[in-house]
Amino acid sequence: MKIIKNIFLIFLVPIYFLFFSAHIYVNIFGKQLLIAKLEQTFNREVSIKNWNTYFPLGIYAKNIEIKGLCKIDEVFASGGLYAIFRSSFSLSMLKIIQPVFTIDQGFVNSVAQVVSSDTSSLNNHSTVLSTQNTLNPLAVTKKEFLFPSFQIKKLRVFNGVVNFIDRRISRDGLSVTVEDIKIVINNLNLTGWGSHVASFEINGNIPWKKDEAKGKLELNGWIDYFNMDIKAILNITDIDAIYLYPYYSTWVDLEKARIEKAKLNFSSKIEGKNNNITAQCHLELTDIVRKVRPSEEPQEKAERLTDAVLDMFKSMNQGKVVLDFTLHTKMDQPAFGFNDIKSAFEGKLMQGRAIAGLRPQDMLLLPAKILQSGIKSGTDISTAIVDGIFALGNGIKNFFEEVLNKPVPEN
Image (cartoon, rainbow, N blue to C red; front, side, top):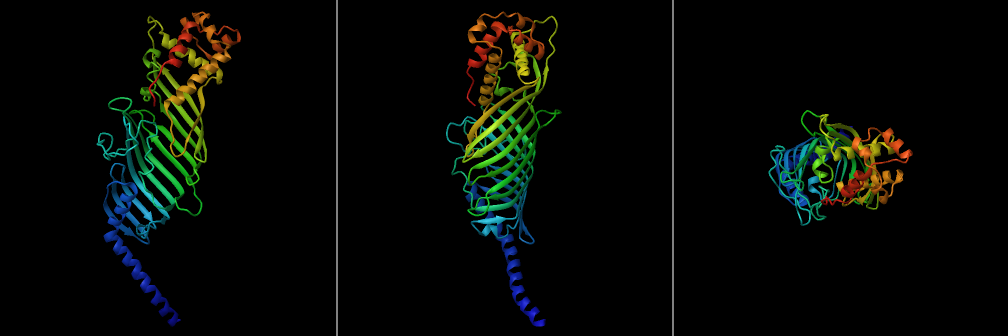
C-alpha cells in the first residue's frame, strides 16, 4: 500500500503543480488574453476591470465593456480556465449578470454598422448599436463578428436590459426598453461536431409608462443555427398601442377617433426550415378606452368610422377585435415591420366588405344614415348584414379610399 501511495503522489504532485501554476498564470496574464480574444471576435475595443479565477476551473470577470456593443456587470465561466488558450473551446456553464444593450436605429443608408453614442439619459450603461433603415435592429454585416468554434452547455443571462431607440420616427426617437431579461439556453454549439439543436427560453418586461402595467415578453423553443432551422413561440402581452402611435400615425388619427388607451396582445408561432421562416401571427385588441365626448359636441367622422370598423371586426370574430396574418422572412436576416400589420388590416377590411356582399361600385349607392348615429354593437352590424342593409355609405367608401390607398413611409 505504501508503494501505491508513493506512486500516486508521484503522479499527483505534478498535476497539482500544473493546476496551481495555471491558476496563477491566468490570474496574471489571463485578462489580456481574454481581451485579445474578445477584440478579435467582436472587432472592437474591450475592457475588463476586475478579473480572477476560482476553483476548480472557473473564471470570474466584472465590469466588462465591449465598446459600441454592450456593458456587463459580471460573468462567471465554468470550465473557462483553459478555454482562453484555445481557438475552439467548450464551457460547461456561462453566467452573465446584468448585461445592457442600447440599440439606436437611425437614418443610415449604408450597410449595417455598430457605433458608440452617449445614451446616459436612458441608462448608466451607454452602449449603442445603430443599424440600417429596417425593423431588424440586431442586423449586422456578416463579417462584423468572427465567432470562434465553441460550445456552451448552459448559458444563463440574468437582469438584462435592452434599450431600443428608433430615430426614424422623430429627431429624439421613440424609445422602448425591455428589462428584467432572463435567458436560458442549453447546448449552444457552434462547433462542427455533436448536436447543434439549442433550446431557449427568454423572458422580459416592457415598462411603457410610469405607474402603468408593464408588458411581458416570452419566447421559447429551439434553434439549429447550423442547419438554419427553428421552431418557437413568441408572446407579448399588454402592449401599449398608444405609446407606439408614431408608427401608425399616418393612417390613424387617435385624437379625432377619441381613443385614449388601447392594449394589445401579440403571439406568433414560428417555424423555419433551411433559412426560410413562416410565422403565424395573431394580434388582438384586449382593451380600449374612448375619451368622453360632451353631449353638445358632434361626433366626428373619424370616431364614427372607428366604431364601424371595430364592430366589423367583432362581427367576424365572435365579439373580439383580432387580426391574423402570416409573415415570411429569412432566419439569417429576420425582418418585421408595421407595413406587415397594415397589409393584414387592409385584407381584413376587404374580407368584411366581401362578407357584407358589397362591391366597390355599391359604395356609391348606399345611404350614409348609419354613420350619422354610429353602429353601437356587433349585433347591430350582424343584423344589418343579414338584412342586406350594411349601410355604411359614402363614409366607408372614403375610408377605404383614404386608408387603403394612402401611402405610408416604409418601415
